[in-house]
Image 1 (spheres, rainbow, N blue to C red):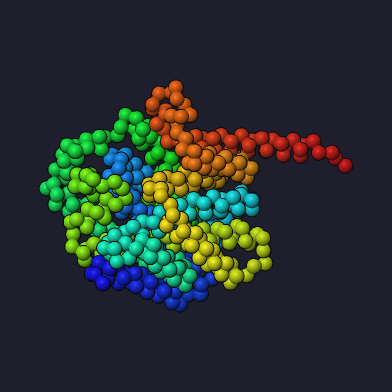
Image 2 (cartoon, rainbow, N blue to C red):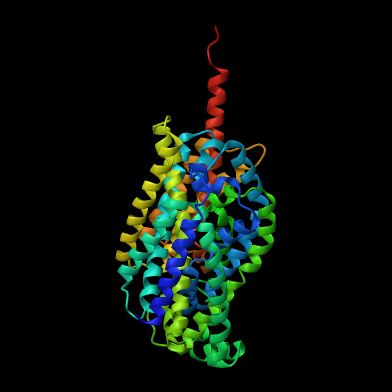
Length: 489
C-alpha cells in the first residue's frame, strides 16, 4: 500500500467516524434526520452552504473548464459571488415560512405555497431529475480523483463503490448531522488545497502570476480573452445572469436553509459566502498553469491531477485525493437526502396520508439507497464532461426560480396553474435542446452573433415566465367568470 492510498483511507475512516458520532443523543425522526430539528447555528449553516457549493467538481471541473475554455471559465466565479448575495433577501422569508408550516423539503414548499399537491409532485420530479446528473458528476469525479491519486491502486469503479458505501453509512445513521460534522474537515481541507495549489503552481513553474499569464499568452493567447463568437461576452453575461438568478434553487439547499435556528444566519452568510467564492479564482490558476505545462493533455478534467502528480510527492497527492473524497461525501449526502425527502413528502405521503414518522424516515432512507445505486451506475457509464453535466442540471433547476421568487411577495399574481405550466414548458425546452444539441445560432441563423451566442437557457426561462403570467391570468378570469355567472337559487 502506497502512502497516497493510506492517507485517503485514513480520511475515509475519519469521515465515517465523524458521521456516525453525529447521531449521539439524537432521536432520528424525519425532521431531525432531514433538517437537524431546525437547530443549526450560523457556523454550521455556513459550512453546509459552502460544502454544497464547493465540491469535487470545484477541483476537477473548474480547473478543467479553465484548461479547455480559458477566460470563459470565469463565469463560475461571477455567478457564485452574485448568487450568494441574493441569499440576503430571499432566504429569511423562505426560512420563516418553512418554519411556520413545518416544511422539510423544497417540493413541499411549492406544494404548500401554491396549495397544490400536483405542483409539489412535479417540483419533486424536476429536483430529482436535476440532481441525478449532479450526483453523477460527484461520483464520476471521485472515481477519477481517487483512482489517479492512489497511483492506480484503486480503479475508478472500486473508488465509486467505496465512496458510495461510506456516504450511505453516515447518511443512513445521522442524516444532515453527519453531513455537517464531515463538512468541517472537508471545508478546511478544500480551502487549504485550493489556495496552496493556486499560489504554489504558478510561482513554481513561472515565478509569478504575471509570468504564468505571459506564458499562456505565448502558447494559447485566445485563452486570455472571451472569443468574438461562441462563449462570447453575450454568452458570458446571459449565463452569469441565469445562474445567479437560480443559485438557491438547488433542492439540496433547502434542507440547509430549513435547518437554521435563526434568519440572522443567512444575512451573515450573505456577506461571508461571496468572499469565500474568491477561492475559485485560485483553481483557475491551476487550469491556466496546465495549459502551459501539459500541452498534450486531451481531457481537461485531468488537468489538476496530472499537474499535481507531476509536481508533488505522493503524500501530498494523497491529501488531494482525500480532499476530493470528502468533497464528494458532503454535497453528495445533502443531494441524496433532499431528493429522497422530496419523494417521501410529496409523492409517498399524499398517497398514504396515515404514514407514521418512523415509516417516512425509513422510506426516505430507502430512496437514498436507490438513488445512490442509480447515480453510481450512470457515473460508470456516462461519457459527458463534468461541466456539461453541471450546466444541464443548472438549466433544469432554473425553471423553478420565477414561481418561487414571486411566491415570496405579499400578493402573488401567479397561481398553481401558471406556475406548473410555465415550469413544465421550461423544463421541456431544456430537455429538448440538451438532447438535440440545439443552439441559438441554429434557431436564429440570420440574427447577429450577440443574439446567437446567448445562453439558450434564456429561451426556456423567458417562455416559462410568459406562460406563467398568461396561464395565471386566463385561469383566474375563467374562475371569476364561472363564479359570476353561476345560476342562483
